[in-house]
Length: 61
Image (tube, rainbow, N blue to C red; front, side, top):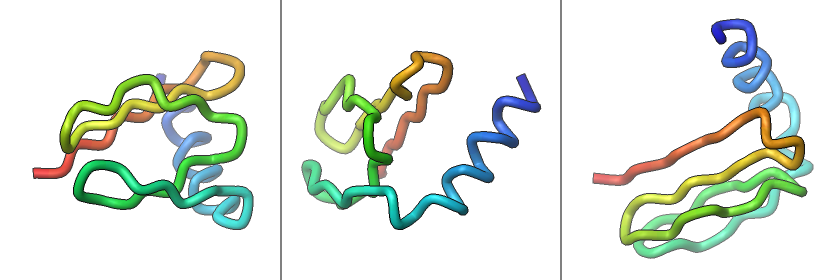
């Protein structure tokens, strides 16, 4: 689990060019190409990787 989290964080830092900025309800986030936005509920967005092995959730308070 920790190894997957570390890989995910490294990819987020290395691949900013491969991301697309998207506007959500009240905030803007970079979503990596190929990732699917699963939920958009107010200030909460969930994204899943193309291989379905990583999930990222962003909540803005």
